[in-house]
Structures are given as C-alpha cells and as structure tokens.
Length: 267
Ligand code: 2AM
Ligand code: CA
Ligand code: CA
Ligand code: CA
Image (cartoon, rainbow, N blue to C red; front, top):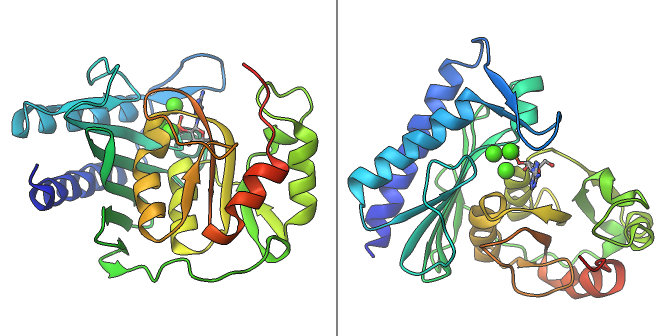
C-alpha cells in the first residue's frame, strides 16, 4: 500500500469530519441508546462513520472498514488493508460536555498497524503516527518516552469501575493496590485521548479492562511509535478483532504493572 498517500487522505478526512462536528456542536442532538441506558449513540456518530465509509469505498474500494456504528464491513480477519474507525470516541462526553471526544482512525495491513490518527476535535489537536516514522502532535515530532519515572511518581488513567469488587473483568484488589502505588489517577472518558496523552507523556499509563478494536487501533500505533508498550492487561499481544483489556504504559514500568497488579478474571 502507498502509506504516505493513504496517510494524507486519512488525515484530510479526519480534519474535515472534525470541522463538521465543531460547526454543528451547538445543534440539538438526536440521541439513542444501544446496549443499556448509558450506552449512547447520536446521529453525529453515525453520520461521521458513514462519511468515512463513503470516502474509503470511493477512494480505496479494495480496502475494508471496521467501524463501531456498523457502516463498514463484517470483519472476521485482518487480511489486506483494514481501516479501524471510531467516528466519535467519548460519545458520553460529546453529549454531556461538548468536549473531550476524539475521532480515531487506525489503518492496518495484514494485521500490522501502519497508520494511527487521533483528533481531539474541540481542541483541534491532531495526533498522528506512521509506523517507523515517529509520532506527531500537530505536525511536531513527539519526543518519545525515555523518562524512567518509577510507579510511585507516575500518573495513570483508570476508570473507577475497575475498583469495584463486583466488576466482571479484573481482581479489583490488585487495581486498588495499583492506585495506592501510583502518584495519582485520572479518568478522561475517551480511550483514544487516553492513549494520546500516554504518547504525549501527559500520562505514564492507561489501564482498562474492556475496549473494542476501534477504541485502541490508532492509539496502539501512536503509543508504540514513541516507545511505549501496549498489551492486554496481563501483558499479551492485543487482539484487533475482539473485546480486550489494555495495559499501555512507558516501557520501564510495563512489566511491573501487568504482572504485579493486573489479574484478569476468567470470562
Ligand atoms: P465510545 O464513546 O466510542 O463508546 C469511556 O470510558 C471509553 O470507553 C470511551 O472510549 C468509550 O467509547 C468506551 N466505551 C464505552 N462503552 C463501551 C463498551 N461497551 N465497550 C467498550 N468500550 C466502551
Ligand atoms: Ca459507543
Ligand atoms: Ca470508542
Ligand atoms: Ca464511538
């Protein structure tokens, strides 16, 4: 594939979609719920994914689209070129706050993440990475995660759900030990932005127990490109086809976090 050409197209579509969202941010929203009353989707999520579907099908008919809102293809493998798209990551923030949401686009070829783009729409911050070419924020090279701060001076992003004993996915006691060990935690409500902040060095890690491929595809490419490590919660390679846990951190603390503090429950 012509990586540079696809990257330029992807970037221009992301910026165009983001501009459209910004220009319509004050308009009344058509909101529906999906799996439960707190699982929100708006017409803007659907329209934005349809925008990407139309663009990709016109420009690259041989590529496939794996998107959250179902405007793409049914994906059961990652052969060839697959665009993994979350049209709005952080829909609850979009609805409640009109900020703190992102467009996330990953382009994978035969299962390898080649391009990652995360766009913080309201702040007009564009995080990009092309594999082996570094990661950029608004065109400026991100310096990479060479700091070696220990866990006790680290800030992680972590959803408080995983502190509750009744959660179905992880031993909450281990997560509480992690919280005690860390300097502090944050929770932003957009997985894509949390990956972007790890890549930027604003966070030392992001740990969460239940994400889908479109939440992580772009973030994985970007964080890995600055030298971060992105695995399942228990340190295994991530699936880009199924729901997964995630441990994304600076390299020097990754093994300690994934082995000492994260103990996944059996499905
Ligand atoms: P979304 O806004 O695109 O749905 C919130 O903590 C983060 O988790 C957001 O990135 C959100 O993405 C994602 N999220 C929300 N519901 C989810 C679900 N049922 N499965 C996986 N990720 C989800
Ligand atoms: Ca959603
Ligand atoms: Ca998402
Ligand atoms: Ca979404």
